[in-house]
Length: 464
Image 1 (cartoon, rainbow, N blue to C red):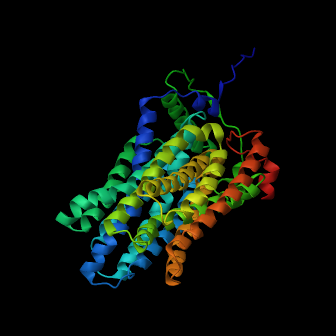
Image 2 (image 1 turned 135 degrees about the vertical axis):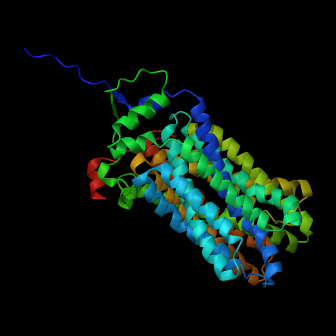
């Protein structure tokens, strides 16, 4: 006599995650992710306020610390794909904690630097950590949030970078006169270390990563119960996930160019590089160009601040439309940003109009950046999500690295200030063309403006 054994219940992971309600764990995830990116943005911007004070203390010539800025960007270029690869191989949570720890420790050690060489080496190592945090945070949030709000939530945490960039100026004005420039390094070191410690105990690992890894079934079911306390998940339940790329492609750079990604990935890189060049050019040279056009130091700082304010508003708007309109908003913002960036130092504008033009430029440029990050978390599937995001961020660092160099060359040619902004504006025009091509590629793949994970067939994946 044989006994019939009931087959274990099978649960589709995407269905399970997409039905996830807003709960305390969701809010904690978003708060910790945003704090991680705030610490990222803080460190990115702090050097701009530390450099002048350090130059005075060490009696350095103007521009002596430029290698330190470049070293940080080069470190981010390497850290993005490297820690993105490690995140796809060994888990998002581990690499987020590792990246934050590297940022915190090297920033604190930087306080004891005694030469420009020491400073450059430490900024490079810090940059590696900075470059690796963003792709893994984006991947983790993408894999633990419902599809209906995924892009919106990724844009929301990306605003943490914008806020972090603003903090050194606000805190520096109050604290540096009292405690010196090292106080910014104390904050920039303690903040990521505190977030890393909290992450160890509070941040969950990506359930999709664990399922793709294939050897953590009990842990997957445990996380599934935490995600969906409203469901009674059987101890023997099988949780499955649809394969969007071959399992052998996990962590493989070639998978970034398989199937539809052969066109989508290069277009994402072009858009990111073009936008980052315009963004860093504006952040680096706008105050200088405004002063060369006749503004005082105080006036230049006040007017230039409108760029960041407009950018924050652009990020908020993108948060509400990215899930519904996909790539289309990027095309519009690239196209609108081109003339606005070109006009940032146009003579003859009234103060109100000048502020609106610069705020509008920031709205477009930073809005594109937030939207790009949101799309990266949606388009790339789990096995290559951190890697794809990391490589795209690294391509953007090329634009960021070019911005101070191009600006310095153009300033040395003694061109009128209003002609210098044509350089970043022309890159935005390139971005407009590339984003239009990207929108066409996504429309062709998804049959509409709405985007989700790109599916690559096993044959396409193995050919890559």
